[in-house]
Image (cartoon, rainbow, N blue to C red; front, side, top):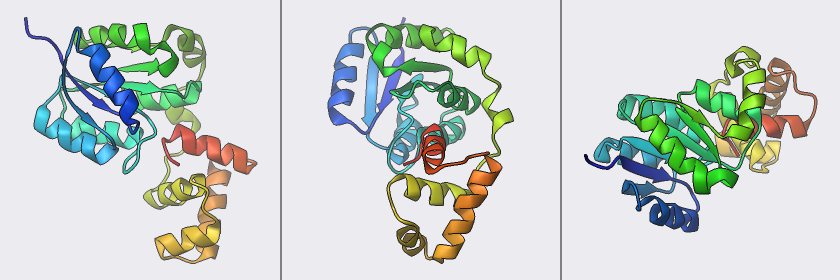
Length: 206
């Protein structure tokens, strides 16, 4: 029986090499990618059985990549491997199509179990995250999807840009940036910049 073909995506080269070496004992690691766009291209070329991806990646967030992978490599099962353990982040990933969510603190044992599970057609979430995730309402029920422009604005704000810098980068006025920022806060019930940045984290931005 052939070994499952695994594609890895993370923007930390040292972590990628470590994962590749660890997983090679049991799986066929067919490639690695350092950002979201490279992940989509590699998945289309390599046709992996499983993709292990991070939420926060340059070029394209893990959540956006999940949606693109459903089109590019529909047979590929996706595992999110992330340092973020917020139940909202986990729920957002599952809503976007992830078959499994592994906390990076559980990687040594959890990732092997997750890959075996998704290859069998099952789902898997790190055990200590399950109670909070199961108790939380579905992510889609708690938030209105961000528009493409809102995602651009939020991404740049989360990267530490001022509203004037965001306006310059996007070719719009600072007043328009402020409108988008406060519209996001109003629609998502946010009351501070800290909560705004937490939303960005859950969306895989910044």
